Every structure is written in C-alpha cells, then in structure tokens.
Image (cartoon, rainbow, N blue to C red):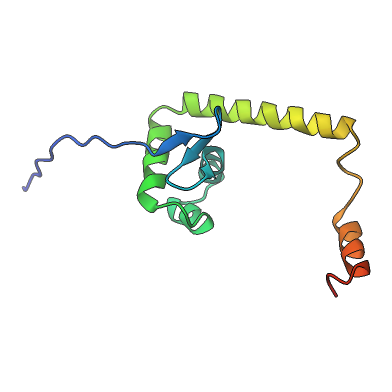
Length: 117
C-alpha cells in the first residue's frame, strides 16, 4: 500500500471586512453571507463561482471548509445580517417606501417614458 507524506498545510481563509462589520470573500466584493446562503441552499462551490465571477473556486472551498469546521460564528454573523436587514426593512415600511410599487407598475412607468416596449 502506498502512503503519501504531506507536510502540514496552512490555508488562509480569504475573508475580509469592508466596511466595518461587513465580511467579503476573495479579492472581489462578494458578501460572505451570499456565499454561505448559497451553500446552505444546496449550491455547489462550482455553482457559486459561476454566480459570482470574481470568486475563485479555491476561495469558495476555503470558506466552506472553514464554515464546516465550526459553523457557530458564521451562523451568528448570518443571524446579525438578518436582524440588520429586518431593521432596515421596518424603517422603509414605516416611511412608506416599500410595497407600494410592483413590477407591473414599474414596467408601465417605463413604457410611458418609452424606455421599454
């Protein structure tokens, strides 16, 4: 039987913060939450890379590998993202800035301006 003698590998997880409190993956500006939610929804790393062309396959695998090793901090980050989104949505609802214009209304406005046929 053949055995392989690998040296220890240290892998940097390509996650960075910009702006403060918002985590991104790789050299691009793809949000960590988008990558994690896609993975949790059943998308493969290859499918995620196809969706976000600025990502590299090794970056997505590194993030997913780190997530699978200890999901608790990532799940906490996703929970905070959800709370912040809910708060913004509530502010917009209170200001009357959501829900009043649907897709058909927007298309009708665009047609009236000659922007679409």
